[in-house]
Length: 208
Image (cartoon, rainbow, N blue to C red; front, side):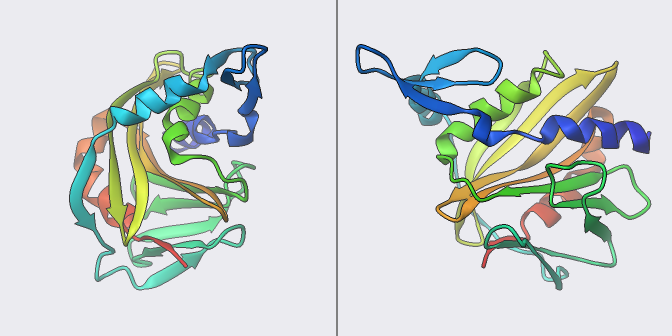
């Protein structure tokens, strides 16, 4: 199952700079995608208005004693090195780091780039790119959270690829210094047993 799940990680490689803005002859701003589709930019704004805000603060776990720093942008992740293994990404060329809950079928990846994208647009981009591989990809949960004093978009995305029902459970963040996708993933059937582990490592996300 490990190799299959790792292969699914490529779905999470959201090519954020594949989205471009343009202006029509009537002066309306639109968003252009690599697959030839487009949408009015104000539609993205309406989607963002429907995303709830979680009022609770989210903070790093006291057992998260190791800071894994990005070399691309000014963010990092506090984690418990006795529970999680990590390495520079080998299987996914778009990711900076790959992670795994030791001895388990829960994985993670940190995708970073220097381009800033409005956080309000990240959900639509995630769906647009992910559905190229998993047409049934859908949002199960979404909300804005404050994680260690930083605003992030939380998404749970479910889909099917080659008959495998998988789920992405993670944070999306952007600032003038870059954009970050910090995602945990596993099969849909296993997520319930891993929720606590997902939340614990995700809440180690910090801006440096």
